[in-house]
Image (cartoon, rainbow, N blue to C red):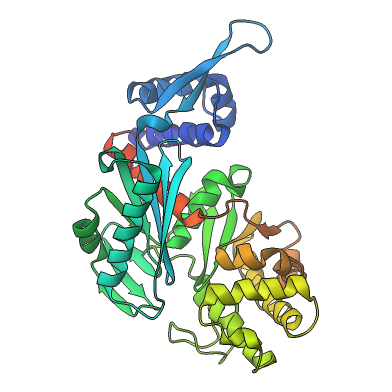
Length: 406
């Protein structure tokens, strides 16, 4: 078996990334603070900070006096270094968020997509219009953009720039990076939303306090971003986390991937619609044409009336979700499971009780006793934030500060 050996360059890269991660989490920190947060020696932190200062990525933020001795210099990432864009391409929208170099959001723009349209040119044009609109909203010149991270649903090979398979669009082997470059003409990084949400949670959410976590994305599609020992799990073909297409019900509902009984067919937006149709085929909410309108209306109906068909819909959906989460917990045994995505943000608080109850019943051998399940605190654009983080890492790689092999 051939194993890769870590080089001194890799170790230096990890040290720089750890310091940047700690600075992003803290906002401002002294060198001693960074040493405590990262576990690195003060000498290593001093070397890393000197490199980041030389590149203009980090600046002094004033001097602090705590206890005895000389006051320490507080540091922060220089947000004015440039702009980084995160683009979330879903079946029903393209959302672009503009971040400064400290990954603080400064503008956003969303373009709706017709969920029944699937030609690559149509999607690429939506991405271009969303980027143009976001830059205009933020007042950022294109020359100031350090990088753009674009998330695409389905299986994506980032280094090849290929959308291998996007089931809702029936894409197979689309060389999407070439199409995007022709339309956007900015430095681009591609990935799929599962890796993006895991990165957002790792850098800005629960990942700041735990080493292993699963972030579940609930929307049109369903999947899981997985962090083990502080690192994103990708798998041999970048396809790890396709939990939405694991089996929940043998010979169950037809899934858009072609299989039957997948998790997504029960807890994806379309699956939730189908469950309501089974409970009450004539329910008026089934007439709503768009998935996001339907999920919002379900949440509104639950707020107004906690009994009836919608309450039964919530109970069944929570059971399906809890059983699926129990399988993840049994296999991965994470410290934390978080729910994210527009369905989770809309229905999350309603879903927590039935999902947690089913998780406790279904997780084998007490494997759920030490896991916390809740709604992610990274709200309103975790995919875009994660993709911006990837673009930031690639920019650092271009500067020679990080070893980027994605």
